[in-house]
Amino acid sequence: MKEKIHPDYHEINVVMTDGTSFKTRSTWGKPGDTMRLEIDSKSHPAWTGVFRLTDRGGQLAKFKKRFKDISIKAPEVKAQPPGAQPKQDKKADKKDEKKAEKKEAKAEKKAEAKPEKKPEAKPEAKAEAKAEAKA
Image (cartoon, rainbow, N blue to C red):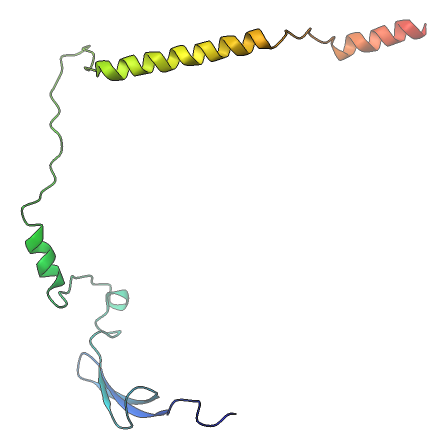
């Protein structure tokens, strides 16, 4: 193993969120330093199953302040009498008609360009024709 390329591996104290502490070995800090955890298995939602918003550095407060006046409202739908057709946009109808006309024109051009194929005889008829030819 090469010398002087690996970090110093020493003993440190770890203090959890509830105040309990334990000793472990780590490359973090200096020998005897204390690492204080903000989140651990006793407070993290992944282990506790309790989910709550934590405001770190005021980010949540900034977000709420910035967007406090914005609210999402569903569009109002007016009731129509039974059997009434919903109003449609005239421009959209014209565009749909033009698209349909173009599709029909393309289909007609394709039909004119391709010669009609004669239907092939059924396999049974072919077998009968071969049998007659041999006889």
